Image 1: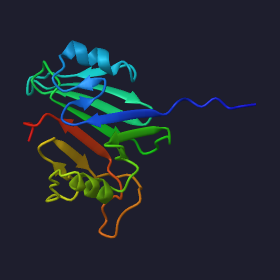
Image 2: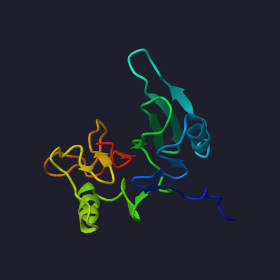
Image 3: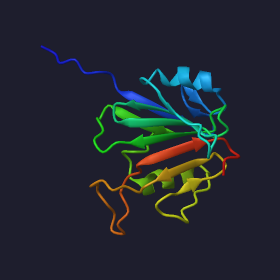
Length: 164
């Protein structure tokens, strides 16, 4: 008797375009429709102090957030890894799983591809030009390097080339 296992879920980061089917520049309505591929969206904003609208969906072990900072179009997309993530969920950047490959290795491979890697803030390195930003900050009990930084990234942001 075989055990049914759901197919793996892959989020493919395509900087500076987005994470298909969610793309930078989509309207609110298009973004809302796109994220339903991953689940039921929750919307927050805009508020008196900011025009930013966030469309959020939880999919397995990922929190996907579309940021509409002008309140109208997607300006950035964040992917957040939850503490317990099933092996079938992968977040790929150039075929590298950014949440299962050590952070330093992800950055090394991006530099080898000719991308400029800014590690001036070790907890939050950036790759300008294609606008990728990573986070290694977490309160979770995770493997750490000798310097205390988490071994793996906990989030990644992708935006258009003029975001930073």
